[in-house]
Length: 312
Image 1: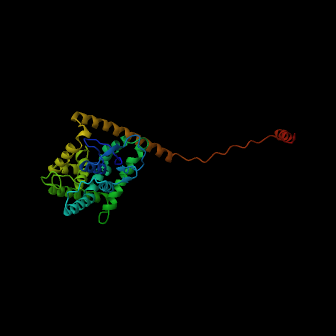
Image 2: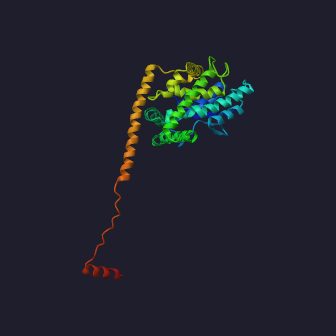
Image 3: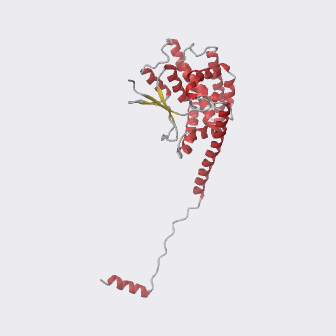
C-alpha cells in the first residue's frame, strides 16, 4: 500500500479550492495525474510562523515549494507529462520561467502590496484562517516577503522607485497574459486535450486573479478581456474541483463578502489598537527609579537599638 500523501495548504474562497496560487498549482497537478492527496487546509489550530505552504507530507518525507512537490510526485509515478514530446517538455520549462518572471510579481503585488486590496481583502481573509495572535503578525510578514521578492527581482536599475517597479511589472504581466492567450488559442489545454504541468501552473496563477473580488482590479480587468483564459480557468474548476467545491450561489457569495467586510473592520480595529498601545508605551515618559527614603533614628532610639543588638 502506497504511503499516504497529505498536502497542507491555504483554504478556498470565491469558488476556488484555494485562494493561494502555489497551493492551487499543486492541487491542480494532483488532480491531473490522479495523485491521491489528502488536503489539510490551514485553520485556527495551525502553529506555523512563516506561512511557507504548500507542504507535502508522507511517512518519510516533507516537501515544500511547488516545483519540488511536483518532482516528488513524478518520482512516485504520478506524471501529468508522460504524453509530452521533448519539445513540449522544453516549452513547458520556458513558459513556467516566463510566468515566474513576468506574471508572478504582478500577482504578488495585487494581493500583498496594493494597499486597498491588502487591507480590505488579503489581510482579513488570511487573518481569519490562523489563530490569534499569529493572525495579527503573519499577514504583515507575508506582505513584506512579497514586496521584498518583487524588489529583489525587479527593483534594479533603472527602476529604483516602487512606482516605477509597479508600472513595469503590470506592463510585463499584461504582455505575459497576451502571450498565454495566443498560445492557448481555442484549445482546451496548452498541449491539446490533456492537462499537463504547464496547465497546473497557469491555472494556479490565473484563477485567484480571476475570481477573488478586489477593489483595485487593474490586472483582473485585463485578464477578463481574454475570454479563452477565463474559459480555461472555469473548465478546470468545473471538471476537476466541482465535487470538492459544492458550488456557491450568488446569494451565498454575497453573504461571504459581507462577512469578509465585517472581518476586515474587526482585524483593522485590532491592529490599530495594538499599534496605539505600542506607540503609547514608547512615548510615555520614562521616570528614573525612586530611591526609598532612609529613616533616621533619634538618639534615644539608637541607644535602645544598640542595647537590643548586644542583649543575648
